[in-house]
Length: 188
View (cartoon, rainbow, N blue to C red):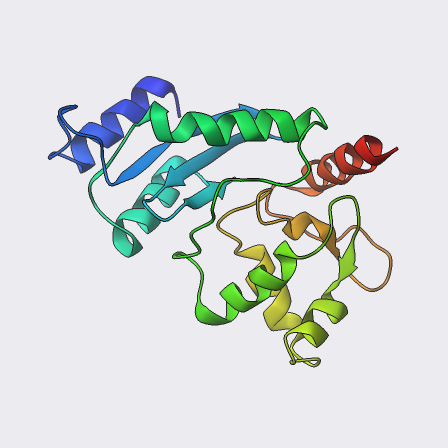
């Protein structure tokens, strides 16, 4: 979606936003090393950092978080700067607060354990399942990770299958490999 298409989407679906006051949800995109990501920031923190289509993310955010949505560089630019620093290997921990409003209760539990996986390391689905006290819930843990609404910042890319394979990732295998490489190079 081109920038003008995103602007049109915001005008049509958020008719109360006239530029006079900032929106409740700041919405925009980030073009980085792993492609375009859709960003949404609520008053509580980063709601979305997603590889999904802008329309899909916009609809989910408006249904579950709020409908007063629009561009707000003042709130989006700090996240963009942190992503730039992360991709260049200069940032190991994001300061941006995370709002997991788009995740189910179970997924929030999984994603909170995932946030504790140290930079430059990986863990397995089995280990995450053990940490949440559900050692047999591997499929559910995998589903929670695959639906992570705040990719990169909530580092689901650091979770791999127990068989040593790279595993699935919302942004694709090349993006997951790139993220893990950025982290291992920065530690070297």
